Length: 259
Image (cartoon, rainbow, N blue to C red; front, side, top):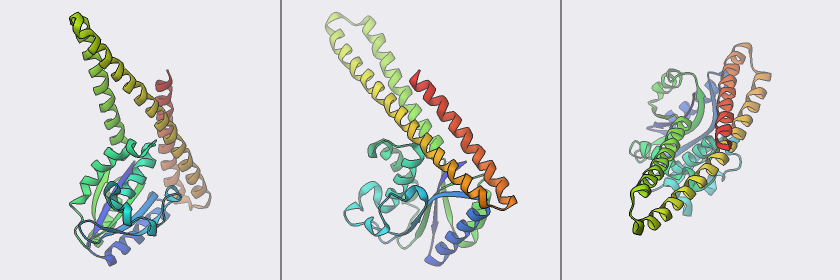
């Protein structure tokens, strides 16, 4: 399962040890890290971005560029990192497309980080929670875990259902409305249907971007598998199959969207 993890540590030593152990697990194939960043809470308003890596973050600003006037964007570097990672994973087609959802994820960790604390934010594939949990425990790592893709899909579906219900309610109202009210109801219906059409186009674009994102991940797995040991190959192939299953689900969603 692909998860967004935010792991907080009380000091730099534990954070660096935790970072190294995560890299070890990735090398062994026990987990697969897509993107990762380490930050430190300097004070209540500012964070330092200390480290970031991952092929999906290659086009993002360098560590030194995340600061200054960008501090307020989606909660500063922590939120920007979450925004980058969630945006990539959900196939975001614009800043506002994932902003509310990124904020919901960010709210989970804001109160956990105290001034001076360190945190590792990472997007990874893991078979179960026990492996990372057990490796982070000696370093006093506290984990906040979010299944970002499934949660965003549920969030997206909830909005879609609410919009459809509102349209159905207005159509029912139109049937029983008196003549003087019908024009206003029709205007509202046209507006709601336009919103639904726009949302459907966004869903199509997001699914297409997510599909490309998954295809790129599968290619990276293929490269890892070429040089992996036999034991790691088994784990990598299992994760690769999960990605192929996700790809098939996206194809089904695109078929529905274009039907």
